[in-house]
Structures are given as C-alpha cells and as structure tokens.
Amino acid sequence: MQGTAGENGGPEQPGFEITRVELPDTVVLSLHGELDLSCIHVFEAAAQDAPRTGTLLLDLRDLEFMDSTGIRVIMNLQLRADAEGWALVLTNLQPQVLRMLRLCRVDERVRIAASEPP
Amino acid sequence: MIHPVDEDGRLRAVRRYRVLDTPPDGAFDRITALAARHFGVPISIVSIVDTDRIWFKSHHGVEVAQVSREPGLCASAILQDEPWVVENAAIDPRTLANPLVAGELGLRFYAGIPLKTADGYNLGTLCIIDKEPRSMSVQETSTLSDMAAIVMDELELRLNARSVIEQERQLREQAESLARELQARLLPPQLPDLDGIETAALYLPADAAVVGGDFYDLFAMRDSVFLAVGDVSGKGSAAAAVTGMARHTIRSAALLADSPAGILATLNEAMLFGRAGIEIEHFCTVLLGRAQAADGGLLLTLSSAGHPPAMLVRADGTADELHRASSPAGCYPDASFEEQNVLLEPGDRLLLFTDGLIDTRTEDGVLEVDGVKRWVARAGSSAQDLVDALRYGLSEPGVQVHDDVAALALKVL
Image (tube, rainbow over all chains, first blue to last red; front, side, top):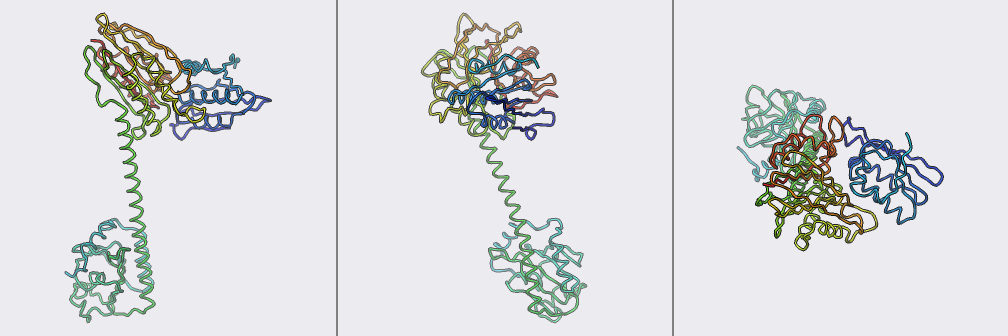
C-alpha cells in the first residue's frame, strides 16, 4: 500500500506515504510525511484494507504532521476494531501528533504502545 | 440591397456563430486551397454575408478581405438554397452590373454553395471564381457542395466548442456563487454591537471556490453573550450542510440551556442522531464561551469540544492558553464536556480560532499555539488589532495556509 499526495500540494510539500508490512497476526502500517486533507484518501484507503483480525499497528515514527482529518480516520479505525474484535495500536508518536490526539482525548480511547528507539 | 425573407433571423444566426472578423483559420484556408486546386480556378472564398458587407473567412487567390454587399454573386447566392452558378458574368443579366465583374477584377465565372445552418439560414458561401468563363458539371457541383458541407461542419464544431466552454464557465460561476452564498450563511452578516465589549472577526478561506467547515458566531441571549468558533471536518457542500446545522443547534440549545458544556452535549447528541453505521463521517470541534457581567468585568465560562485552545491576552500583554480537552462533537455518545471559569478584567482580550491557524506552515515549521502567541505579542490593544495581527502574520512571505482560518476576538471595555 503506497501512495503520495503531490498533486494537491506544491513541490515544497514533503508529501505523504504509507508502507505496509505483514507479520504473523499483525499488520504494520508505517505513515511517512505530513497528513492533511489533501492526502487523507491515501490513509482512508489503507484503513479500509485493515485486517479484520489480530492487530493493526500504526507506526507514526515518520509522521511529522497530522491535522484533524487524520484524527477522524484513527477514530473510525478504533470504532471498527471495537465492533469487529481486533486491536488497534499506535506507536512512536511525534509531539505534534500526540498533541492532536490529546486535544480530542483520542489518546484515552486508543492503545498507545511505548515508543521504540529509532 | 436584396435580402432574404427573414434577414433579421439570418443576421442573428451569423452573430451566433461569432465568425465575423476572426483571425485566419488553417482549416478554412485548407478547404479554399483544395477547392481552387481541384477545380483549377485562381480564386476560392469562404464568405459570410453581414448586414452591408461580405466578409471573407478565407480568401484563396485574392487579397481583399471583404467587399460590399452588391447583388449578383455571394449576396445573391444566399437568397436561395441551390448552388448559384454564373458561367459568364459579363453577359449574365444577374451579374453584369456587379463591380467585381464590370470593374478592374473582371470576374467571369462564379459558383457558390450556400453555407446553410441546421435551422435553415444561409450564413454565406463557399465559392470558386475564375477570370475566364467556364461551366460546372453536375458532378463538380456535387463536389463543391460536399466541400461547403465540410466548411459548415467546421463552423458547427467551433460553435459547439465555444458553447461547451461557455457552459463550463457558467457552471463554474454558479458553483462559486453557491459556495459564496453557503459560506455567507455560515457566518453572521455582521457582529452585533454589545454593551461593554468590543469584538472583531476574521474569516480567510484557503480556496474561495470551496466551502469550508469553519464558522464563528456571536449572540446575546438573556443576560449573557455567547461566542463560538467551530470547524466541521471535511470540505464542500456536505461539510457546509453540517456546519449550518451545528451553528443553528448551538443557538437553539442556548435558548434552552445556559451552560456551555450542556449546549455542547446537545450538539453532540444532535450530530450523532441518525448516524448510519458505526463510522464518523463529519465531526465538529467547537470552542463555546458564555460571558456575563461580574465584578466590573466579565465572567467567562468556556467549554471545548476537541477544539484548539483559546488565547487569553491580559491587559498587561501576557498571553495564556485556556483549554480543556474533550472529544469533538459528533463522535461518541459518552463524550463529556468540561467547563472552566475565568474572570476577564477591563482591557483583557480573548481570542478564539480554528486549527487552520495553528496548522499554518512558517519558515520555522508548523505555527502551533506558541507561534500564535508570538504574533499576538506584537498586536495593538484593541480586539481588531488581535485579528489584524493574525491577518498580517498569515500574509507574511514564507507562510503557507493549507486550511480555512476563522478567528473571533473579544475585548472587555
């Protein structure tokens, strides 16, 4: 699962990309770059393909920015995980992303795993 | 001058094709060159008959670009639907007086096919001309008619292309005016004049043609003034519809309840009402304040639904964030909204804004609330000064705004 969002932003925009790794019982989606309205469809498409069992791990180590549209996708992933009985885990949150989650108190509704050293 | 029966209608048709006085066009020039070569004549013309002149869209073998509307040649050819053939103009009573025949040019042979529109008007002709008398076979007349039909096809193509472009332009203008209309209804037409406070607002759409979800509102009710800034997720007409609903729900809820947290709880319920499926389509972040006169100043009760902090700028210039985290409205049935109370003294100012402001990119990275503090620190002392400081900051070189920005400022007098 890969995608970029160059067409809506200027050349100075770092863009947004998702890489997917499948481990036994866990799918890891690593988000890279900056996530806003212009590239939210990339994240939404990846979220639609989320597994219906096991664990979905969102590695946000390289997610430098996320606006409120990204929060909505994470909220919906958690609602689906609760309804379908699988687990959503976020890890390696950058300060701005963590602030966004706290602002909406989503940090209380999703599991945030301890960050691993890079 | 000789005229067809419905000359007014014919002239309207000529205007509709908007071909008069247009620059040369390769397609028509190729047809006249082809006709001249095929029939072995020196001159071939695509003519359009105007009110009092005959204008040449393409003229092969002759320099003049238009002639007067004298009877005999093109002007007569458009009077009927058949090919107009003059084998020897010098002896033909229809043409012998025509200046092009009698004069220096001394034309002798003319064959013109009317360029007939779908609604039956002859715009002009495709004609071939020789300085020697000659005749036209039935087959040759039929070939020239086919070439005239190609000219007409080209004219139709251009008319259609123009009308498609025109339709697209009209659609775009309609969409833009609808967007502006919707947006105008999401914002108060003007801020009300309220005793004891001064207010100012800012609304900067990232894209004027796309309706955003940002809104602000300010209204007096009973002994209170309510102020709100909100942002519905997403863009476009669907987000705009939710935005209108959110703003009116806040006003309606304020009629029935006094507490900002209670009003946000009502908004949350209203947005969740009738949700299809488990997923959140639109949510709304809101910062809602109620101000009441107290102790020579204003008692502010503030409640947030997942919205960025408010900024309290004291009379001495110190700036503090006012914030209680909570879920945005429209996400969770079990969301709870907290309140915080602050006493505003005369000279104190309050600034509410949407996340488009703090998400703004500057040369030093994302602006964040700290960046807003820096911008506010250099503002003058009025409510308008606060808003102007934001407007100025957003217009600085190197600053990129990716989202709509709405802001509302209040000063205690």
